[in-house]
Length: 349
Image 1 (cartoon, one colour):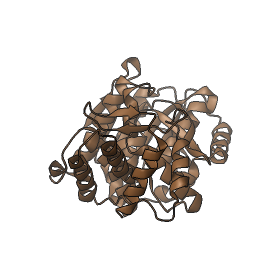
Image 2 (cartoon, rainbow, N blue to C red; image 1 turned 180 degrees about the vertical axis):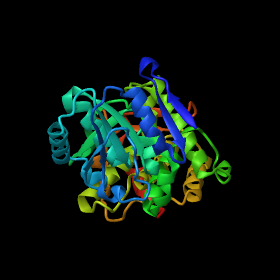
Image 3 (spheres, rainbow, N blue to C red; image 1 turned 180 degrees about the horizontal axis):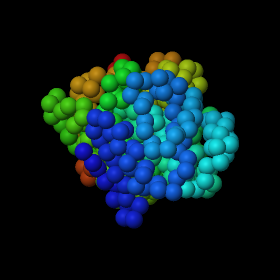
Image 4 (tube, rainbow, N blue to C red; image 1 turned 120 degrees about the vertical axis):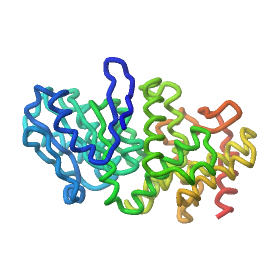
């Protein structure tokens, strides 16, 4: 299967299939004919997987970075760029990100800023990476103040979603990806009942097609692309607070699932949707095996403050919410309403 991100002369394909990684060598030969060096950026745990058997045509250098969100720091970025410089990478060479969303974010950002931009190819190996992070050119690292606050738009030459890499995925990583899939399912306005008959490959393809079409229409998030942040205002706030406590406490998709359940309740409180939509959201999350409770250890005031620091905020609290006209970016919601709905939501748990 192949999905095209139609950015005119910068269009690229997302390949989705078992063994997609084995198409990398031919792709690099065709698209990077002048490359003398290819650098694979990955983690030590992924490098140990049975499917880590990449052929790139020329011998590839491999650079290992920390696992998960701990890779997305200035210190890691600096070290990575120093290693690229030590390998004497030129603008004709290529970086290959092999890993989940954190690795593809870091690899993409390093490629965006090293020598003011070199080519990157993404090989996402997790559900989050395949359905969200590796496509669309949004690359970033984190600050203590929030997720993805320092980054750049840097489109890849291609994306290879190899379903074989999902076979070794830990359960929590699988659930994290399902959180992003739930978001895409709801953005498409699909009913929970139709989810039962969909295979995982079907869900990945649905999510990739949605994101590709939105990115093609709004590459730099000036309008419609912001809808892909549905559930992320609360989700990112929970992630930031949880990361400060324990790097393994809350995964991205787990936080997004909570954000989706909260967002539809906020939309209901604002009169944008009826109660049936809350039921539909909750059922989608249930079918996918996703919980949606706010961690009890996190204080409401801290959560609201963290939501205000999200990169999508415009000096107020900003949410993507469903409504009669579909999904929209909604600003200027009274803080009291946000707190009341959050407290009510927490009371359901």
